Length: 304
Length: 304
Image 1 (tube, each protein chain N blue to C red):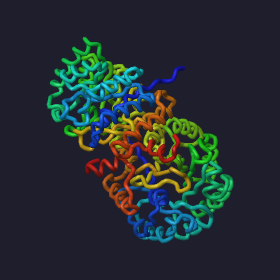
Image 2: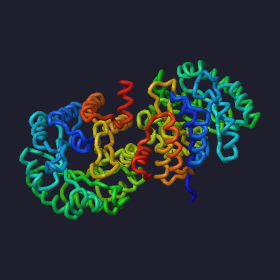
Image 3: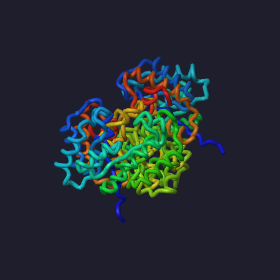
Image 4: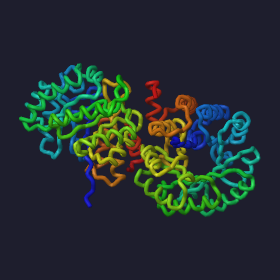
């Protein structure tokens, strides 16, 4: 009678901060990551090794990863980093990054606007990286953007998602994160798509990545749980979004995911009070309020 | 192959405005109700016949109901009014109110603080009203507050809820609205309580009334749908709460309920754009922003 373990992948420092206009110092980002570690989060996406001008907030990737690795590297925490190409991978590898995240989308228009490449071309780039990573025993996670809908192409088909998921699995990723980049997924669609995905892939290799743009993230997560998914991406306080997708405001808040899991007796290993402290710190730094109603209620009442 | 019909009970003009500090004119309230009618909502709770000083926002109950009855009474819309006692009932009846709502809670501490009576005493008062209403062929709806949790007594038992529901049914109500007054219900508890309720009562006689204080309203509604519930209380734009319960901010927004239902192919009879217009009107009058992420996304993008 073990309790079901839920894995939360904290994407606040990368997916979250990437969409915030206030550029933080490396020390501030480190402090945020350090507080997330204290809260008991076991996987924290640290940064992205893009070319520095591409995303200003990620301009200190080398310094930040070095600081995290030096001061927090002894902890039992995974610190994956996003890698866009072989160049980024080589840099990450040289710093001792042990896990990378590769990314594409189910929409060609989206990948064109995002990384100036077709989906096929992104897989060519990713294959180069994956071959090196496998030699180096660096773990690989795959991100699929626009899984349910695209800001340019509208609703995306399950066929496109199956295809991209299959190609990621062939690259040797340990997990694919199915991303609702612009927050248009609804429970019926999530259930339908998951039922198809599970015909071919183990639910243990699928993670769900929801944005709460239209308030549906928790209903989508509830349905995902019912379909056997146990890994969820989220960001502390609900930071984040996608700078290339209009209206894509906010990953689902880690606090919201925590509350839903806790209410169902599912174990996340997270200390809520310490998580809220990490969120309060970073929200203060980027000077905005949380979008999480649960975190707001906690901050108002002082009670979980 | 009929589409499942969902009944939405719009409680914004009563439960919503009752918790707003800005006192509106009768004309403004009438305008709000008129816009809600245009949006296609078929049940709109108009006001509450409490003693005028008790809740200042409800001080114009007579004038407002008269205006609604005169100008909108020809529409196929139900306009229930809250009635606290026989005195309030007599006033409502004299104006031609055709449906009343009676209310109590599962927590004695809550009813004491709210209406200065034990649960038993509230049923004595309500029985007097119900007997008259039945003679007059006035329909009766029952409200149960603190069904899942109470600000004073904490988590409330299913036994207390079963008992109060049973007593309401014995009064001859056509429907009981199960209220999560302070927004503490979670999906597991909702499912557990509904499974028990359904052993004794038809789901067609149960309505769900959620507040989105902790962001769980839509997950609770999703579970309620799965359990066969088809009637939901909500307030346009997410107005409302409970003035007696600290931190009880906001009924679930009618827009959020609409979006969830629409995404599942369930028919509400509501025109979303007109509903959003009603919400924008009333939010402007009470000078606050909506708490509904879906309505925010719509107002930002102009698209559903």
